[in-house]
Image (cartoon, rainbow, N blue to C red; front, side):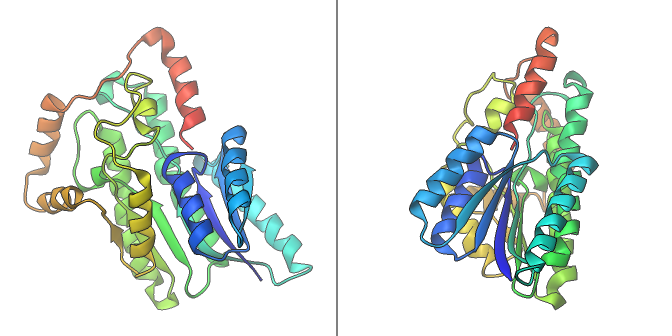
Length: 287
């Protein structure tokens, strides 16, 4: 049986770092790197294959967004398993990392609704579907890591749909962990705050090139893998993130949403003539 790891959103940021670290720390037969940008995927795969003595990184160009994306992933997974069953015993997914996702800055009414719906299709629909179609290929001792966000703990003004989508990821992951406990399949939700990735550039349509005060993805990913393999349900690396998550239990949800709307505004481009261009750029970068 071929033991594999699967990472979505693997072309940059946290996904790329997950790929690098698991290739160095764990012995998988293959690491499937899934994203839309072939050039970036090839760079990550070449880097891993040049350094790893264990795993073979395999770039897989695929748009996993929405129901159609999940169907494409399912068909690919089924074909791979059927082919392997002819010579081996099929596929065992030891590690599934649902990392693909993106966000948008700005008030809900000022953000193109198609872009918001695309966000839900990727952050929620794709993640849910991939978990579902992958489950038959997970065994005792397998792990699922779903990338949520610190934003998952409270509703946020100027970040309404993104925070709501990540709240879904967090709650879904914890519930799934409870359901899979008896099968000894572990689920962990990664809930990072600001990390130095392409996220801000995409969310702001280019108005902010980097996340303000972003931390290195290296420590965030290392901490998450450590917690996931200790069977923890949530991974929060920085003490400030843990404190903010704790505060969410005692402060008014509406107050936080109102305060962030009024006083925590992030830069974003709102040029209506460039909406289509901005959407095309963001969709090319979100994974």
